[in-house]
Amino acid sequence: MVPTTPGAEGAELTAEGPEDRSPRATAEHGRRGRAGTTFRSLHVRNYRLYFIAQVISVSGTWMQTVAQAWLVLHLAPHRYQGIDLGVVTALQFLPMLLFGTYGGLLADRLNKRLVLYVTQSSAGMLALALGLLTATGAVRLWEVFLLATLLGFVNLVDNPTRQTFVLEMVGRDDVANAVSLNSVLMNSARVIGPAIGGAVIAVFGLAVCFEVNAASYVAVIVGLSLMRSHELQASAPVPRAAGQLREGLRYVWRTPGLRVPLLLVAVVGTLAYNFQVVLALLAKLTFHGGAGVYSMLTSLMGGGAVIGGLIVAGRSRPDIHRLTLVGMGFGLFIVAVALSPTLVVAGVAIVPMGMFSIAFIATANATLQLRADPLMRGRVMALYAIAFLGTTPIGSPLVGWISQVANPRVALMVGGLSTVAAAAITRLVHRRGHSRRPAATAPAERSDPGAAVGVA
Figure: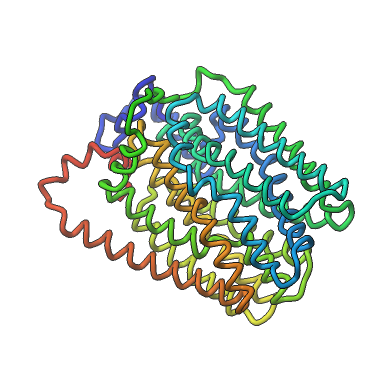
């Protein structure tokens, strides 16, 4: 990682710039090469602490995800199970859709580490409340809806803060690698969490999953407290001013390198990435299984995602060209899962689907972070969260309804074909934009933060 000084977050780190060819620099380069590029972000102490804490916390989150889905299926009337499962997922992301830009503005204005103390503690308390309600037998469907909504308000601030805090920990050089390793982390937990969650549900019941998740947030608090503040590459807080939300929206809309991938992410987030709903329904309605089948499908998808994340982590030049190729592959494998005649075939097809899913997420995330102006990064990543997660209140009930009136296979087909079409259109628009760009404007493009790292 190339060290930066305070206030230099927007500095260009280009291959065309002066290169240090001293013996010390050459030796350092050799050490990093031998260590490999895939795990280089873990050499940063603060990020290593964050990574370890998140492994524990996100595993607990996935345990709760499985338990909450099964709790809703248990509490909801049979004929409304698909719709109610879609509603609880939608409520969890509705605050992101309505107020997500405010969360991004707070991420730009406030100390990100302090914000994470508050948001992670709040999420832990909500998990504990759901665990206690379930353990006492007092839980009702409306209470699950309420707690999901409150968690959504926590996440609308937590999500853009976590996304941008990664760059503060590792710097511009390693942000693409760190984002990919975060994806590996999330999906390793997707393997571990549901597998443990399914076993815990079978042996101890649903409540324990929620209580374990609540306890797992302690690891994050400890990890944050052990970080060295002077090693964080914090950007200067954005001072309060009128019109900052509109300014962020205008900035994204007039920047094709941000607008185009965000629109693609919005399509995928709305129609394709509703696996919390559709996999539970696929397990129960299509393959007539229980929580174990749902956990297995989720774990297999997570296992594929780990592989995909490791592949992407070794690549340091995310761009829209790669994003569209990965998007088309992702859509095609969603279709393959939808057409699988048996559970075994679906289990095989869902692994590469998981690989492409996380490659898509990591590539989109890193592309946007590297292209965004440092003073706008929180708002840009809030719009990314809205496009990817905030669209869930629209997509989840729709997917639940399609699964209920038709079947989960049809819901998967809609998501897969929409992803292929959106990625193909994005690719065509992007290529036409590049072909029409006057050659004389090329030097000016160096002012774009993403140009320095090969983001097309």
